Length: 394
Image 1 (cartoon, rainbow, N blue to C red):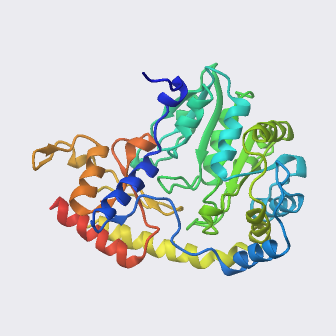
Image 2 (image 1 turned 45 degrees about the vertical axis):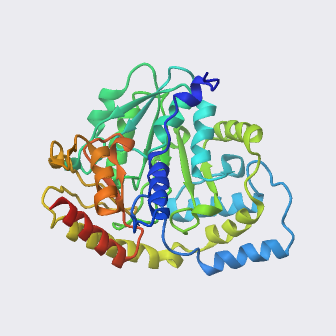
């Protein structure tokens, strides 16, 4: 008899983590799997950040931290917001969490009531949908396509709003599509929201520095949206610090207080050593990690060139992050060894079993016609992986 809660029984397993686990399982069986499924930079954390962590250990940082983060770290985050985004926050508006994922969960728990609708432009990051559901909210998916670079228009936003709409969640640069909203595009969405003053925006900017067009734009930069925007960020992607687990928000102080209250009952403050290291990361000029961004851009161009050589793949040119999100629906209905590919999940599984390449189905991101390919891997691995994909499809 199943004694688990309805809450956990109705919760999906993270598709990105599930695919990574499946790839690990096949590796233990001796299969040579190339993993292009995880959103994790393949660079090492920069030495200047590691040295700050070692210094913190030697300085005997080992006690519980303030729930919302060390004041010195919050001050460094405030400096970063001003320098990189021209956003002015104060100490009570910043909450440091155990990764940006916890920041998102805090916001959902603090703001969403049962039945509140949350607009999610598709494709969206894999966990948005279930984080909203966990808080008994209702995800409202707004479909976009590769032809519009997977970006929601002002008209689509207006059409999706109902009296129950409470929030909009989106990422820019976007995981999984790599799409980047320009200042003009964000302004058009903000103009729609001027007629709906009770709707709040979660702007997930974790990939802000991995941007190939320059000039990252934040929703909170608009004076008429500042008090309605929760800006989420962290160090996992730009600084190759996924395992350090530090994320943060800048938000109206009443929302930050609520997130602090929630976190105080769930995890308390984030890791002390990681926080001390992140002070150094926040104080650093983003140019110190430009070498990673340059390499990601080279890989993007490489991957697009190789994929465009495969009949049936439809690609656009992502402007940020480290993913391509090709439309592979032309393969639906095709059969191999008695198995028919009916959707992106079948296609992704086919690539894993036949090409020994791990990708992620677009179903997990709200777009069943696409797959996500991460190019956070060496150029040699990418060349070999896409050769295998091409051979298996031929």
